[in-house]
Structure formats: C-alpha cells, structure tokens
Amino acid sequence: MAATLKLGDRQWATKEGSLLAYNDENNNFKPLPFDFTRASSATRVNQQGLIETVASGVPRIDYTDANGALKLEPQRTNLLPYSTLDFNGGVKPNGWSIGFGTGSYSYEQLEYKGQKAVKQTQITTGRSYLDTGTITILANTVHTLKIQFILDECIADPNDFIVSFIGFGSSGNYQFSDIDSNGILEVQYNPITDNIGNLRIGLGAIGNVDGGKSLAWAIPQLESGSYATSYIPTSGSAVTRIADGCSQTVPDGIIGQTEGSVYVEVNISNTTSKTILALDTGSASNFIILDTSSSLSPKILVRQSSGSFPAIITGTTMSYGVNKIAFCYKSGDYAMYVNGVLSGTSTSTTFPSGIIRGISVGANSSYGYLSDTVNDVKLYNTRLSNAELQALTTI
Image 1: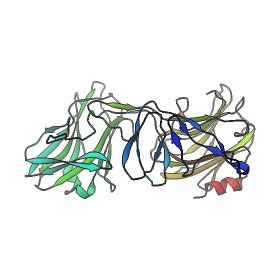
Image 2: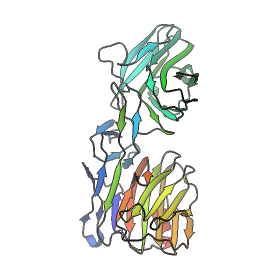
Image 3: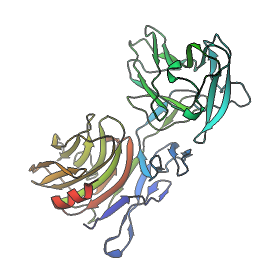
Image 4: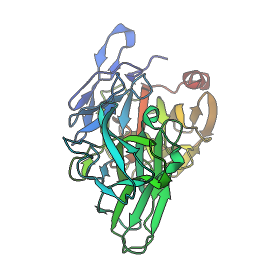
C-alpha cells in the first residue's frame, strides 16, 4: 500500500500560504505542498496547551488532543465586543458592566491557557452579574454561546450561577447553568420573532448566593450557528475569522484517473453537515466527495458534468471523536470502510468527466466546510483491496 500522497500523521510543516504534503515512494522524497488560505488571523491550542493567535494564511496545527491535527473551520464572527477580559487597572474587565447587583462582590484578574480571565466572588449574600451591554444579533437565527470555566478557582455550586439572555422585543429572559465536567458551558439561543435584533448577556449569581462563593471563567464567545468554533478574541468590537482553505492541484500519477483510494482520519466534534474531502477536475461540475450529514452518516457523492449527484454510498453512523475512513473509487466498483468495518458498496458507473487533478481537505466554498480537525490524509492511485481498506481504518 504505497501512498502517492501523504499529509499529516503527526508530521506537520507549515508556513504562510502552505502546508507540506509529500510522496516518498521508492525512498524518493518529493514535496507536494498544499495551498492554504485564510484571510484573517485565527487561534489554536499550541503544544504547551496555551491558546495562541496565528497570522493570516498560516495553517493551524492544533494540539487540543496532544498529537497535533489540522484545524479547518468555516467563517464565523464573535459577536461579543469584549471577549478579552482585560482589567487594565480597573476593578472589572474592560467593556463589561456590573449589573443587577444587590449584594457586594469583587472581581479579580486571572489567566487561563494564556488568555485573560475573570474571577467573580461574592463578599456578602446577594446577586451579582457582569453584563455585556447591547449586542446586535441576527433575528430568527440560532446563536451559540461558549464559555470555559476554571474549575479549580470556582468555589460554588455551578447551579448558583447562570447565563442570562435578555432579548429586546418579545423574547423574554432565558437562563442556563449547565457546566460540563471539563468546565465548558455551551448553550444555544434562538430569537423568537423577527423584530429581535439586540441582546444582552449577563453572567453571574442568581438569588441569594452566600458570601465567599466564586466563579472563574474565560474566553467567552457568541456566534451565529448551531455549534461553537475556535476562540476569536475581541477587544471593543465584533471580529470575524475567515474560513480555512486547504487544496492542492497535484502532478500526474498522484491521483488515479480511472481508479483510486483515499484515506482520512478526522476528529468529529459536532452534528452538522460537512464536507471532509473532495477530489475534482478543477470544476465544481465534476467531483468525488466524502461528506457527512447532521446524523454523522458518511457519504460518497459523485458528480459527472452538471448532472445530479445523489449519494452512491451512505455509510453507518460515526461517533464523536476520531474516525478513520477509507473509500475506493472505480466505475462500477465503489466501497467505503469506517473504523475497520465495511460501511457500504456501490456498482454505480457514474464517474467524473475530465482529469482529476484537485484535492481539497476540509473542502472549500464550492463544497462546504468541515469545521473539525484532520489528523491524516493519504491518496493511492489504485483501487486498494477491501482487506487493505479494512486494515487502514481499523482503530
């Protein structure tokens, strides 16, 4: 099983606009760099476990799981104007108001994974909040708020504290307090009517919380969408992170023209339709795509010219976390394995017209975006046997 193209597998080399893949058949190393695009800065978790910002156009190798994986995400905007919780000599984070308070309380500057954090402590019994002020949102659109809590600094029952969504219009007040075992709060807010275009968010104690109780948190983010993406720092206004793009027009012989096989190891973190990988002729009219639905069922789609492209294989449901997927393509002979198990076959004779030259990892604006991390990609210019596909994907 000599792969004609290899990307990742804990071997990463990045620079602005480029991510190194390679071919090392016959012990002859040939670099095959992918073009990488992202017209904005973005954040990742580095090898020291700290959140850091990388420059525009630089691929993000994220070490959240310690091994390092390529992070690929769609465009998103952090709508919170002040997510950087910097006190700058004050008694509270810049841009946040002390609101709804009836007791006495204090605020302290902390640090979390290299970012500014805040600790809220009740001095006497009562309520205390930090308040964002008015935020402009999209009406009738699901928004996701994500906050990370510093559990070893929290001295309270998490149910004593809430996030309060206060809509302007006819929305009312929505309160949540579920913090998971990792210290992450992720909640959705859906404006009820079209006339709601503004929002305030309060974070703090509800009711008569005893003195001495505290809540410590960092990197808040509010974005339009049904799931949270990587942290986008803001310091006075909303900030947009542009989508990641990773693609390569490969030399002859790298991608099989009449048959071939693809292997990808991807970390699935959310239930949304997404394109994991695409092979194409340089045109969105002719392609082979590996994607997944919101039910986490992987699919192989093949389009010839401008015809329709129903899934020729819809596989068994994947799980959250690492999934190993391999599929082969050949007119009349398609197969897909997921985590060592045959997930589907097809005798379809549909095959892209033209010369297959392009590969997009995490796809692009033509096919949709991944919004996950990729650990490893391999191409083979022959139709591997089912036994070989099974061996590649066995967990």
